[in-house]
Amino acid sequence: MKNINITRKITQGMYVLTTKNGGCIVDAVSQISFGKNPLISVAVMKNNYTNQLLKTNDRFAISILSKEVNPEIIKTFGFNSSRNINKFERVETTKIEEIEIINNSLGYMICEIVDSIDNDTHTLFIGKIIEADVFEDKEAMSYQYYQEHREKILKAQ
Ligand SMILES: Cc1cc2nc3c(=O)[nH]c(=O)nc-3n(C[C@H](O)[C@H](O)[C@H](O)COP(=O)(O)O)c2cc1C
Image (tube, rainbow, N blue to C red; front, side, top):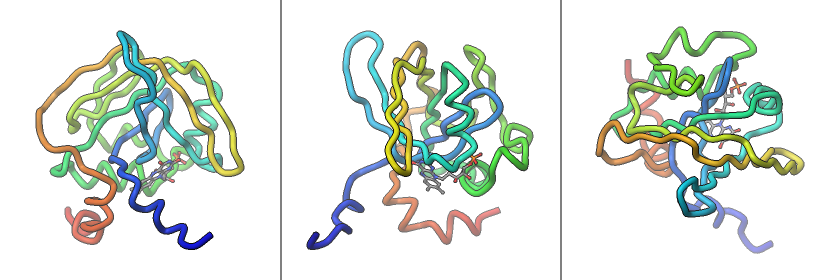
């Protein structure tokens, strides 16, 4: 392989995946079909507690983060495990269709899990959108923006 670093140029976003009893920051989200109830895929690491939760839950939500997101959300969901803390005690959420949605987000999609594919490191969960809403029309945070401003974002607050 000449240079695997080209994969870093794949454009991804910054999201909070939530499900019953937990969730985590994810960047690996894609829309994989159109129509009335589009399909969304999300790749979740096998050693994340969220992976275990998704194996026993039938739905998840994706809340989309803006460039101005409260850094506490990234710290709580991206650098802690629900094995040790209750993430929903640290971040304001609203329960919609039985799933906690991040209030400080641009909006959300709630998905019913319809399929999953395991590889060595991740499980790709495929969900059908059953509910969605837009809270704010601001610029979303890309994974690249997060990487470029990571120190400033994580130092804030
Ligand atoms: C910027 C960022 C992007 C991340 N992207 C993913 C991802 O796409 N998939 C994933 O499984 N974990 C991802 N993570 C890691 C999880 O959010 C992190 O390991 C989390 O603490 C797992 O919590 P849990 O054990 O409660 O599931 C990301 C973390 C950060 C900070």
